[in-house]
Length: 321
Ligand code: PGA
Image 1 (cartoon, helix red, strand yellow):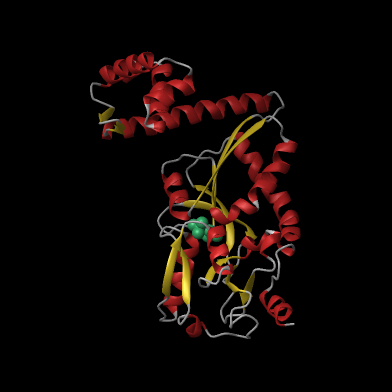
Image 2 (image 1 turned 30 degrees about the horizontal axis):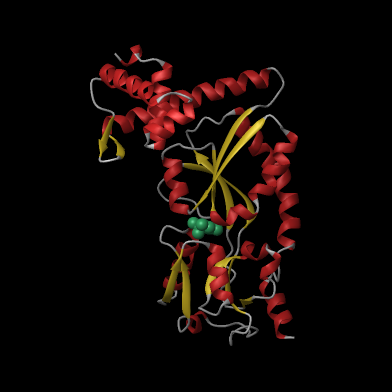
């Protein structure tokens, strides 16, 4: 039965299911909306069950639709891999590289991608930046080629390649009473107001682990969904926060926030390039992995040196003067 479906019908279904909109799918595929509806109706007839349901103006996938969407991803991934293989055989690397990375990696990964694209001009990139929980969800749904994480998942069988340090530090406004103090005990921080990332964030998870391991509970004054917003709020003296040292790569932050010298900090972590163990990497994804092995260390060392005030002690000294 499903063998009678055409590739075009699957393509139309995939576009509607991904966008959850007939209009957007029609625009994307340069089709009219009635054509999209007809193709979907024919596909649902072949399957013998509804694939989508519309409630009010919103489109939802049925359970059957969700399963078919996974199959579509496998088919289209397989075809894309084949296409890349053919261009590789012809001696050119071409195709698409889809990456999903955690928020802190957005300061570094684009630099790496810039160099990668210069070397392989035929490769297109799509880069999704989001928090750990959503990156893990995308990995579970097999939505991208490669992922960058700060903490490996506990419940997924993944290949992990650490490639650069991603230390977490405690930041406060530069005129904060704790700025410049030596070896602050973590208990002291429990008295401060904290600014926290949203649930699902890897930084939040690591922060909570650090303090709960020491039997401490934090006073959370505000939850914010972006590292930059937290940094601005720290600078405005709304509270202190644990953030990645990479947030300080932006020059403007030099004078606004101080890194506190807290015992147990920085929390040493890495960025990992990750992908599910059973995933078949495309030619382009393999090329990126190789590129990362050779280039990231070189680039990374230069880059980390550029982070203001890292390591912690030096910065604390500088601020004290
Ligand atoms: P997050 O991850 O964006 O989920 O907080 C960042 C990190 O772990 O460095």
